[in-house]
Image 1 (tube, protein in one colour):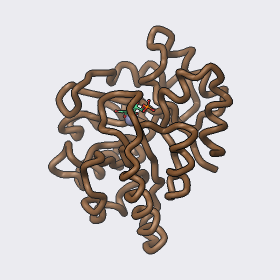
Image 2 (cartoon, rainbow, N blue to C red):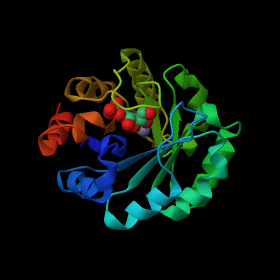
Image 3 (cartoon, rainbow, N blue to C red):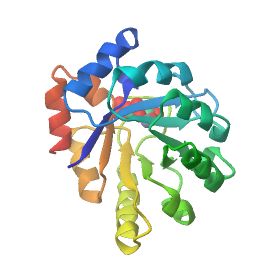
Length: 216
Ligand code: DX5
Ligand code: ZN
């Protein structure tokens, strides 16, 4: 069954605990946490203290998406703060393989992510180290943007590679502009985990929104 990861970037930060419990109760599988440093992406969001604060209030895995330069410097801190999956941008670290090892050594699931302008082939050498591969379907930095259809090809490629190679055990996740309509295209391409911010948190009926995205 397709997993749904609501992105708390679109939630009401003044009531973050309540917002997380709400989507947990309404069927979410992961809580997607967008960390931005104002350098790798042109926006600043939240960081280590927030991850630490929300860990104890939910039983769902914290899916931490680091949109920061040199993520290797913060892997240990995010692991200690309670991240279940730490996902780093290939574009943000000079030593991707080493960074994934660092994450693994912390006992946390390893994730790797690429921007819409980055070819998926750059990931091939490290795919056996990844528990999760995230395909950005918008340029990272902001919620509420339109899905970029050209990114679907990368999902298809990742799905083909894992069928061909038994050392590839990653889940495929998609992030950005996911709604009922784009979700079905992602699923058909091979995605297992769908991140959605606006389409869930801004919906009047979040339970229905989650179900519609999952069953699209
Ligand atoms: C974008 C973030 C996304 C974002 C998704 O930089 O990584 O997780 O919150 O938001 P929507 O679903 O509104 O596009
Ligand atoms: Zn994200």
